[in-house]
Image (cartoon, rainbow, N blue to C red; front, side, top):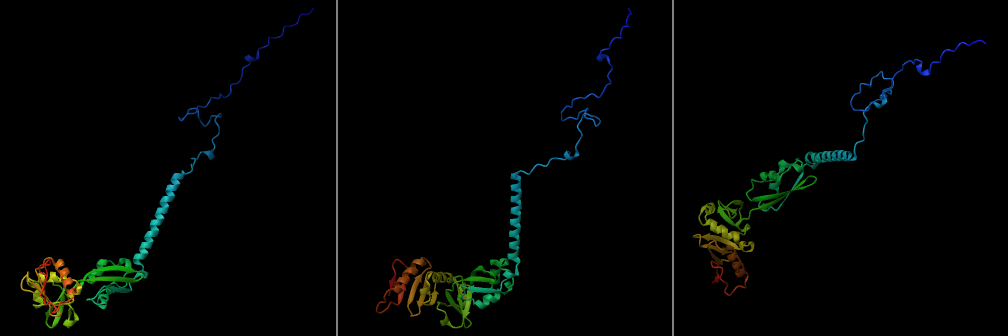
Length: 290
């Protein structure tokens, strides 16, 4: 019987040498740069350039509303500014006509001629001060009120000083106000129904002038127009004469309002027969007629 040669021992598979391959190392997610993230790392995903740009977020609604509001306000300001510039400088609003009212002692022709330098100036550029300055040379004018009448008109309302008496000088009769300012002149005494004060232009410098002027200024127009003469020997003895030769003894320039009311009542009452020649209102609580 033949003997078999024993077979060589079988080496387990675990003992077979294995060729080493690349080792995969887990990637750590961190905001810090990892030393493992190298371009040569085969296990890292390939970078996509299409996702490397910054992501654009939509503008919040509140910011958009604020932006629209700023743009709207800016546009409105520009429109208003353009409109104002047009109104201020537009030749369409240039002054072409002037209407003067409220004047008696100053004629409309004189006032209009004095305002001619304003013609051609746009209405928004014309001020009350400019009109007052051009009319300042007229003594009767106390104040003026100016109103634009678009598109090219100007309304000027004049307030004149009130004449209370007449002074005679060099064949002319001068109208004066209570301050002694000469307002106008007339050649015919009968053309003006105001009392005459003796002494000519020097009368305004006398010590009794202020008393006479204060009395005349307190009288209503209905009585003032009936007076023919005013005089005073002293500040306490003002006398007035009516056109029908009746005399009014006023006394001092005190309680003028009360005296004026009493005198108005006396002149409005039925006349006695014969009519009174003197009205004494120097004591308004006890008037006397004789």
